[in-house]
Length: 95
Image 1 (tube, helix red, strand yellow):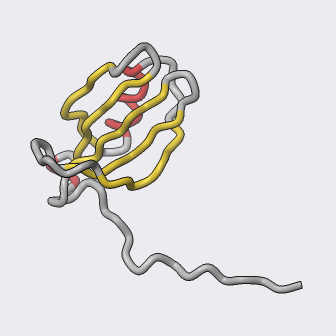
Image 2 (cartoon, rainbow, N blue to C red):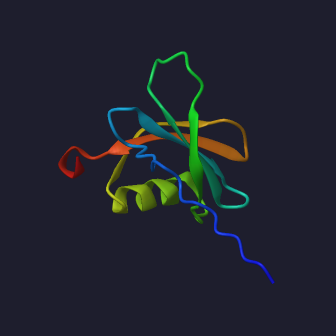
Protein backbone atom coordinates (compact mmCIF):
# COMPACT_ATOMS: atom_id res chain seq x y z
CA UNK A 1 0.00 0.00 0.00
CA UNK A 2 1.36 3.40 -0.96
CA UNK A 3 0.62 6.69 0.72
CA UNK A 4 0.85 10.06 -0.94
CA UNK A 5 1.61 13.27 0.85
CA UNK A 6 -0.20 16.30 -0.44
CA UNK A 7 1.99 19.39 -0.05
CA UNK A 8 0.65 22.27 1.99
CA UNK A 9 -0.35 25.44 0.17
CA UNK A 10 2.47 27.96 -0.20
CA UNK A 11 0.39 30.81 1.16
CA UNK A 12 -2.59 30.99 3.41
CA UNK A 13 -5.27 33.50 2.43
CA UNK A 14 -6.17 36.06 5.07
CA UNK A 15 -9.64 37.15 3.97
CA UNK A 16 -10.34 40.10 6.24
CA UNK A 17 -7.26 42.22 5.54
CA UNK A 18 -6.48 45.24 3.41
CA UNK A 19 -6.93 42.90 0.43
CA UNK A 20 -10.69 43.21 0.88
CA UNK A 21 -13.66 42.15 2.93
CA UNK A 22 -15.13 38.68 3.14
CA UNK A 23 -18.29 38.09 1.14
CA UNK A 24 -20.20 35.29 2.84
CA UNK A 25 -23.13 33.78 0.92
CA UNK A 26 -25.16 31.75 3.41
CA UNK A 27 -27.67 29.05 2.44
CA UNK A 28 -30.34 29.14 5.15
CA UNK A 29 -31.69 25.71 4.16
CA UNK A 30 -28.41 23.82 4.59
CA UNK A 31 -26.44 26.14 6.89
CA UNK A 32 -23.42 26.12 4.55
CA UNK A 33 -21.75 29.35 3.43
CA UNK A 34 -19.40 30.17 0.55
CA UNK A 35 -16.62 32.59 1.51
CA UNK A 36 -14.85 34.89 -0.92
CA UNK A 37 -12.47 37.84 -0.61
CA UNK A 38 -13.50 40.99 -2.46
CA UNK A 39 -12.77 44.70 -2.29
CA UNK A 40 -15.99 46.77 -2.27
CA UNK A 41 -16.49 48.58 -5.59
CA UNK A 42 -13.84 46.48 -7.37
CA UNK A 43 -14.61 45.18 -10.86
CA UNK A 44 -12.67 41.95 -10.24
CA UNK A 45 -14.62 38.82 -9.38
CA UNK A 46 -14.52 37.68 -5.74
CA UNK A 47 -11.69 35.24 -4.93
CA UNK A 48 -12.77 31.95 -3.32
CA UNK A 49 -11.53 31.53 0.25
CA UNK A 50 -13.46 28.52 1.52
CA UNK A 51 -16.69 27.19 2.91
CA UNK A 52 -18.08 27.20 6.43
CA UNK A 53 -21.02 25.73 8.27
CA UNK A 54 -23.07 28.41 10.02
CA UNK A 55 -26.20 26.75 11.36
CA UNK A 56 -28.91 29.15 12.34
CA UNK A 57 -32.59 29.56 11.71
CA UNK A 58 -32.39 33.19 10.61
CA UNK A 59 -29.98 35.76 9.21
CA UNK A 60 -30.04 37.38 12.68
CA UNK A 61 -28.61 34.14 14.13
CA UNK A 62 -25.78 34.23 11.58
CA UNK A 63 -25.10 37.93 12.35
CA UNK A 64 -24.86 37.06 16.06
CA UNK A 65 -22.43 34.20 15.30
CA UNK A 66 -20.27 36.51 13.18
CA UNK A 67 -20.28 39.21 15.88
CA UNK A 68 -19.30 36.66 18.54
CA UNK A 69 -16.35 35.73 16.29
CA UNK A 70 -15.09 39.33 16.20
CA UNK A 71 -16.50 40.17 12.76
CA UNK A 72 -18.64 43.12 11.75
CA UNK A 73 -21.42 42.78 9.18
CA UNK A 74 -20.95 45.69 6.78
CA UNK A 75 -23.89 44.87 4.49
CA UNK A 76 -26.58 42.20 4.24
CA UNK A 77 -28.58 41.31 1.14
CA UNK A 78 -31.25 38.63 0.57
CA UNK A 79 -30.39 37.12 -2.81
CA UNK A 80 -33.59 35.04 -2.77
CA UNK A 81 -35.66 33.04 -0.25
CA UNK A 82 -32.74 30.62 0.24
CA UNK A 83 -29.51 32.69 0.05
CA UNK A 84 -28.37 35.69 2.07
CA UNK A 85 -25.14 37.52 1.28
CA UNK A 86 -23.15 39.24 4.02
CA UNK A 87 -20.12 41.49 3.52
CA UNK A 88 -18.09 41.20 6.71
CA UNK A 89 -14.86 42.67 8.05
CA UNK A 90 -12.84 42.55 11.23
CA UNK A 91 -13.90 44.88 14.02
CA UNK A 92 -11.62 47.89 14.48
CA UNK A 93 -10.37 46.53 17.80
CA UNK A 94 -9.45 43.16 16.30
CA UNK A 95 -7.27 44.55 13.49
